[in-house]
Length: 159
Image (tube, rainbow, N blue to C red; front, side):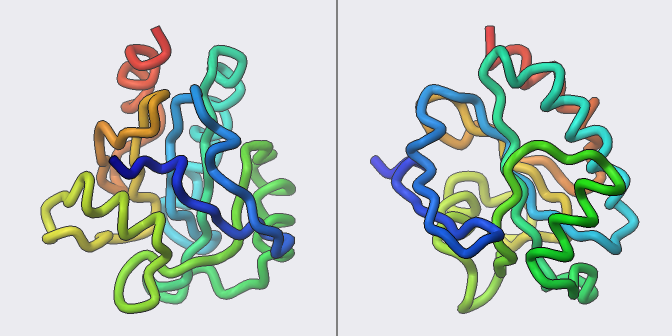
Protein backbone atom coordinates (compact mmCIF):
# COMPACT_ATOMS: atom_id res chain seq x y z
CA UNK A 1 0.00 0.00 0.00
CA UNK A 2 1.33 3.43 -0.94
CA UNK A 3 1.73 5.96 1.84
CA UNK A 4 3.01 9.55 1.89
CA UNK A 5 6.37 8.10 2.97
CA UNK A 6 6.84 6.70 -0.54
CA UNK A 7 7.24 10.20 -2.01
CA UNK A 8 10.19 12.54 -2.38
CA UNK A 9 9.57 16.26 -2.75
CA UNK A 10 11.74 19.20 -3.66
CA UNK A 11 12.72 21.63 -0.94
CA UNK A 12 12.61 25.36 -1.54
CA UNK A 13 16.39 25.15 -2.05
CA UNK A 14 15.88 22.59 -4.84
CA UNK A 15 17.10 19.49 -2.99
CA UNK A 16 15.20 16.22 -2.94
CA UNK A 17 13.70 15.44 0.48
CA UNK A 18 12.26 11.98 1.03
CA UNK A 19 9.08 12.12 3.10
CA UNK A 20 10.07 8.91 4.87
CA UNK A 21 12.14 11.28 7.06
CA UNK A 22 8.81 11.97 8.76
CA UNK A 23 7.96 8.31 9.51
CA UNK A 24 6.16 7.96 12.82
CA UNK A 25 4.99 11.60 12.80
CA UNK A 26 1.48 12.98 12.35
CA UNK A 27 1.53 15.23 9.28
CA UNK A 28 -0.60 18.17 8.22
CA UNK A 29 0.09 18.83 4.54
CA UNK A 30 -1.06 22.20 3.19
CA UNK A 31 -0.90 23.91 -0.21
CA UNK A 32 -0.11 27.53 0.63
CA UNK A 33 -0.04 30.96 -1.01
CA UNK A 34 1.42 34.28 0.10
CA UNK A 35 -1.19 36.61 -1.39
CA UNK A 36 -4.44 34.84 -0.54
CA UNK A 37 -7.35 35.69 1.73
CA UNK A 38 -6.40 32.59 3.72
CA UNK A 39 -2.72 33.58 4.03
CA UNK A 40 -3.22 34.64 7.69
CA UNK A 41 -3.74 30.92 8.42
CA UNK A 42 0.08 30.72 8.46
CA UNK A 43 -0.12 32.18 11.99
CA UNK A 44 -2.50 29.44 13.15
CA UNK A 45 -0.46 26.74 11.44
CA UNK A 46 2.70 27.97 13.14
CA UNK A 47 0.93 28.04 16.52
CA UNK A 48 -0.29 24.46 15.99
CA UNK A 49 3.24 23.43 15.02
CA UNK A 50 4.84 25.09 18.05
CA UNK A 51 2.26 23.49 20.37
CA UNK A 52 2.49 19.93 19.05
CA UNK A 53 5.81 19.41 17.26
CA UNK A 54 7.46 17.96 20.38
CA UNK A 55 4.60 15.45 20.54
CA UNK A 56 5.15 14.34 16.94
CA UNK A 57 3.37 16.80 14.62
CA UNK A 58 4.98 18.02 11.42
CA UNK A 59 3.36 20.55 9.13
CA UNK A 60 4.52 20.49 5.51
CA UNK A 61 3.81 23.57 3.40
CA UNK A 62 3.69 23.41 -0.40
CA UNK A 63 3.44 26.82 -2.11
CA UNK A 64 1.20 26.79 -5.16
CA UNK A 65 0.49 29.49 -7.74
CA UNK A 66 -2.43 27.71 -9.47
CA UNK A 67 -5.24 29.60 -7.74
CA UNK A 68 -5.56 33.22 -8.78
CA UNK A 69 -1.76 33.42 -9.24
CA UNK A 70 -1.56 34.12 -5.48
CA UNK A 71 2.00 32.87 -4.97
CA UNK A 72 3.97 34.39 -7.88
CA UNK A 73 7.29 34.77 -6.04
CA UNK A 74 10.38 32.59 -6.25
CA UNK A 75 10.90 29.86 -3.67
CA UNK A 76 13.35 32.15 -1.84
CA UNK A 77 10.87 35.05 -1.80
CA UNK A 78 8.10 32.77 -0.51
CA UNK A 79 10.35 31.43 2.29
CA UNK A 80 11.34 34.94 3.30
CA UNK A 81 7.72 36.13 3.29
CA UNK A 82 6.58 33.22 5.48
CA UNK A 83 9.39 33.69 7.99
CA UNK A 84 9.25 37.48 8.20
CA UNK A 85 5.47 37.84 8.34
CA UNK A 86 4.40 34.71 10.21
CA UNK A 87 7.54 33.27 11.82
CA UNK A 88 7.01 30.01 9.95
CA UNK A 89 9.42 27.38 11.24
CA UNK A 90 7.76 24.25 9.82
CA UNK A 91 9.16 22.80 6.59
CA UNK A 92 8.19 24.69 3.44
CA UNK A 93 8.86 22.93 0.15
CA UNK A 94 9.38 24.21 -3.38
CA UNK A 95 6.46 25.58 -5.37
CA UNK A 96 4.31 22.88 -6.97
CA UNK A 97 1.11 22.33 -8.91
CA UNK A 98 -1.66 20.43 -7.15
CA UNK A 99 -4.17 20.01 -10.01
CA UNK A 100 -3.95 19.09 -13.68
CA UNK A 101 -1.37 17.24 -15.73
CA UNK A 102 1.52 18.84 -13.86
CA UNK A 103 0.23 17.95 -10.39
CA UNK A 104 2.93 16.80 -8.00
CA UNK A 105 2.80 13.00 -7.43
CA UNK A 106 2.32 13.53 -3.67
CA UNK A 107 -0.79 15.60 -4.37
CA UNK A 108 -2.11 13.00 -6.81
CA UNK A 109 -1.83 10.49 -3.96
CA UNK A 110 -3.43 12.81 -1.38
CA UNK A 111 -6.37 13.50 -3.69
CA UNK A 112 -6.81 9.78 -4.45
CA UNK A 113 -6.87 8.97 -0.74
CA UNK A 114 -9.22 11.84 0.25
CA UNK A 115 -11.01 13.03 -2.90
CA UNK A 116 -13.19 15.70 -1.30
CA UNK A 117 -16.22 17.21 -3.02
CA UNK A 118 -14.70 18.20 -6.37
CA UNK A 119 -13.91 14.73 -7.65
CA UNK A 120 -10.41 14.93 -6.28
CA UNK A 121 -9.49 18.44 -7.41
CA UNK A 122 -8.03 20.87 -4.91
CA UNK A 123 -10.52 23.73 -4.54
CA UNK A 124 -8.15 26.53 -3.46
CA UNK A 125 -5.09 27.48 -1.43
CA UNK A 126 -4.87 26.14 2.13
CA UNK A 127 -6.57 22.82 1.49
CA UNK A 128 -5.22 20.59 4.27
CA UNK A 129 -4.61 16.85 4.57
CA UNK A 130 -4.14 15.14 7.93
CA UNK A 131 -1.92 12.05 7.80
CA UNK A 132 -1.48 9.56 10.65
CA UNK A 133 1.86 8.30 11.95
CA UNK A 134 1.76 5.31 9.57
CA UNK A 135 1.58 7.63 6.54
CA UNK A 136 -2.12 7.07 5.79
CA UNK A 137 -4.30 10.05 4.82
CA UNK A 138 -7.11 10.24 7.39
CA UNK A 139 -8.89 13.51 6.61
CA UNK A 140 -9.10 16.37 4.15
CA UNK A 141 -10.07 19.90 5.17
CA UNK A 142 -11.44 22.73 3.04
CA UNK A 143 -9.44 25.97 2.74
CA UNK A 144 -11.93 27.63 5.12
CA UNK A 145 -11.05 25.20 7.94
CA UNK A 146 -8.86 27.16 10.34
CA UNK A 147 -5.88 25.44 11.97
CA UNK A 148 -7.54 25.80 15.40
CA UNK A 149 -10.56 23.87 14.04
CA UNK A 150 -8.24 20.96 13.18
CA UNK A 151 -6.49 20.89 16.55
CA UNK A 152 -8.82 18.29 18.14
CA UNK A 153 -8.16 15.87 15.25
CA UNK A 154 -4.40 16.43 15.54
CA UNK A 155 -4.52 15.80 19.31
CA UNK A 156 -6.50 12.58 18.78
CA UNK A 157 -3.88 11.23 16.34
CA UNK A 158 -1.02 12.19 18.64
CA UNK A 159 -2.65 10.48 21.67
